[in-house]
Length: 369
Image (cartoon, rainbow, N blue to C red; front, side):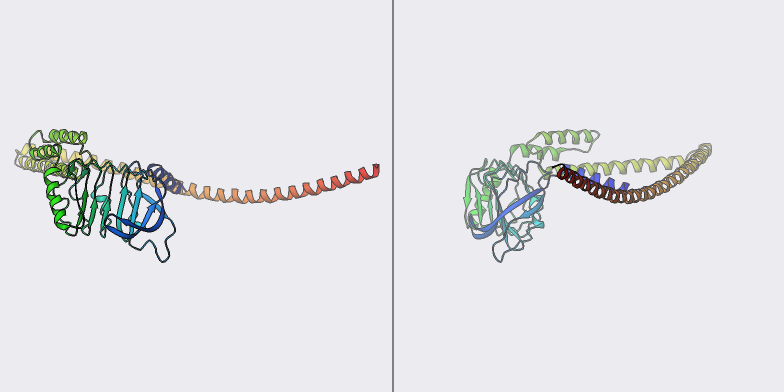
């Protein structure tokens, strides 16, 4: 029972932390930019996705058109539905997602992890949003993209290799962004020209400075402080949520920690060698010290063994108490059932007595009349 209560506490705590989102779909056919007659889920309800934690889709509802189901090729379409962060978990409901369109909304950022589940994605339209950065690697798991719309946004930085592997991309819309104002429809050559322009016009100076500072980090005596200062600067920049830089920073921190451990092990090994080559009297002292340490460890082991025994005994007592508590619950439930039966019989008897008294009163009344 204690375990059940503990799991319930965890469950309800998670429910408070994560607010799941239910999506109401209106399923119909629709024309999209450069994509005609596509079957879509048009979101009907306001989603209120205002944080990363409550972007998890919990349920999809709606009536499909005749002959259609969630397994069909589907375009997910949310327009002005209060979507600040990309919905997560749609792939669990729509296994054949081919298009995603989030229009006229407050979407702030989009990452590789958001699009990774959709390897069949052909169409992405995030028009009129607050997105500022398109990071390197964002489309690494979407090689089938044919149409990308990033227009009317605050985009000021696009990674150098973002579009390089998208060989099927024939339509690219980047009108009304902070860095360029171009678009090309069903024209691979025109798309390649836009990509070249993006590489020259959409590389942020702030990013270049941060990237250069990262490259200049030197593994010297002040390296840990350098890493800390750089991380502070990164968090204060517009690239605070830029995952590629953070990934490289974390990798560098891990490498530094690994190198520090190697250095400690090397120094320890050298110290051991020096001790091994020390004069006999020092060795005797070390032996005595080792013997003392052994005695201490042995006594600690005894104490731990005793504690383990007591804990085991306590656990058994708790289990017995739990069993007795369960028996008591059963007895209480049985007693409660018996009380209900007694209560029912009492009420029935009271009804009989009351009914008899009422009849008697009526007879008296008739007699008096």
